[in-house]
Image (tube, rainbow, N blue to C red; front, top):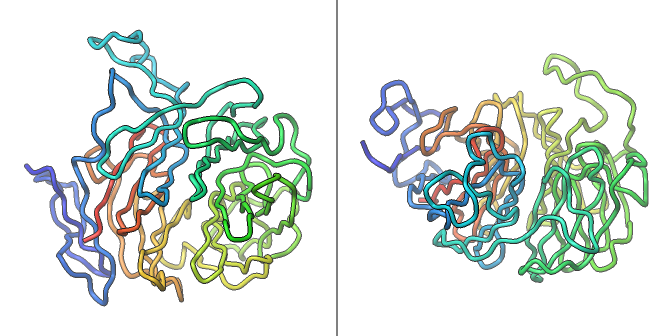
Length: 370
């Protein structure tokens, strides 16, 4: 049995045993991808063990900053019954909840942890979404019914600004209130924060990152969002003209496009920064059941994107230009390289993938790019 698993990311691959275990199938990986398609190897040594019996809960946010430090937001209040026995300083029993925001360096060493309720801001009741920008700020959100705000901190956890407030949402066309925002990303050159808004609202909203002021928003296909109840997603039905709950991710590509994960409708829609619709990639067309998060390959053209298919525990690799799947890997399971409730993705400057699991997965993993 080995601690390393190789997965070949190719459109068609042979099925092999995983870690010597019969029935735990993966796609084998070689050292060179067909046509330059990225390939990955799970890194069993990352991250390093946390100190003092610390444990993380459901991973609700993950981002890799400009220094290749990995930031994680987890639901520290959601410890299971058998994890609540230890007191601070007790190393004999499980467990102590780690701070909700954790920073790791590129080698997987713990750097710092902070977060939770404090003076001057409203910490979310159910954490969801984290972004560490290149200017040295960390943005945090939540998706409880009352979590209609985004918080801005320095890297060491000093509170800077709150956008929105807890309480009732004002709907998807509000210019003053958010609606359970799921994630965010900063366009530093324009001082604009793009928000996937989210679990309550059904839109992308753009805010001034310095003041928090509203700038613009749009719904599916660049139109005005509606909060009317929509039929449940069915791949046999015509594509919905509205975003579903939840609008789960927003990503900015180097060529100025905005990628939005319409998770409830199992698709990714692409826009220009003014909200003009460009195209969409429908998960059912390449076998996905859940389009929850995505990251881009590290080449200058960002030729590929990796999409998390949480329901099937797959990582799917698509050509960014046409949305055609060129590879996939991983599966359900508890072993290293497998997933329970695959939730978040991150990528560093070398193209290494980072994954976060919610539900009963409750861990982060790294897949090094070969």
